[in-house]
Image (cartoon, rainbow, N blue to C red; front, side, top):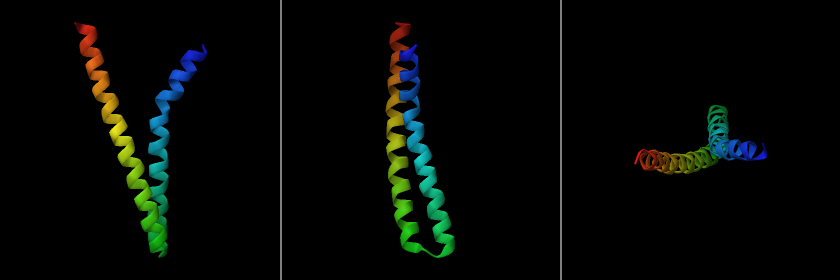
Length: 74
């Protein structure tokens, strides 16, 4: 049973990163609307970096998943 929990926790790590990227994007939007341009720019930069890392990890896992399915078919 602990192995299933660990696998589920590992699976959700990428979504935690996406969640933080969305949080920083919202912070950036709110700060921009309120006129805090420095904070808005910083939060937007962090959101872009986190989203980029999430995207790279997603694409790597997608390619690994596709190659794994192809290996099982052979």
